[in-house]
Image (cartoon, rainbow, N blue to C red; front, side, top):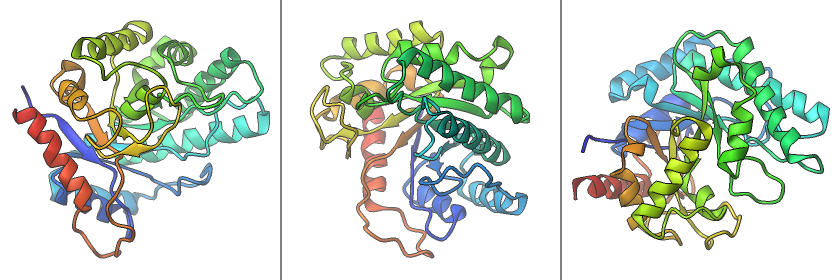
Length: 300
């Protein structure tokens, strides 16, 4: 069994190069980060070349490949919104996310599709796909960077809970652009949305195969998170691996399944530190502990 590309989403206090150093200190081969504050649309925020160069220098020093970096888009982007001003602003924000991610040379930027609100879910899925298309058409392809849909826990009218919804979003992208998009799966979101990834290895494999069959492709990344809440709760609250309702064993199955090979596997589990000193390059203890736990699953 080959090594897996395990990563974390470290604190970026002190700047993005500090996040890289903290990920490396945790023993990670990958990391996830924000390129702008995640509570704003950031539709006019650019990533300057000198800032990107500092991140590249930190990655090179840490021995982390640029293509093992994931960018998480702002949480406020609601590309599914039936309210045109919100949808258009979210679409512009998503394009800027792709632009900044491309400057970094990262694997991709993942985003939450958002909520259909009072609108029709199918129409909402189409709007999400159109937002992806807009981003791809307005940001030149200079490397392999992709826009990636993240599945959701299914609370309220949020979109992306099922493989069918994700497939409809991706279907809005022209064939010549499809290689620049895709999707990823968050284990907590799957569990919370009522997908069985935990009862048996066979059930987990059937779930992964279902997503691959319906969308036409395998997931491009995985978020590895246990769940604070029970199965089918529709609540997105992450827990440390083995300390939540999913339990440790399903993660052992997942890490030893070919579906997890060759893609970023990013932990978004709770931090142990409440505050981070800007010049502190040490890893969050919980991140280091989780990486060691997952590596143990591979070695067993």
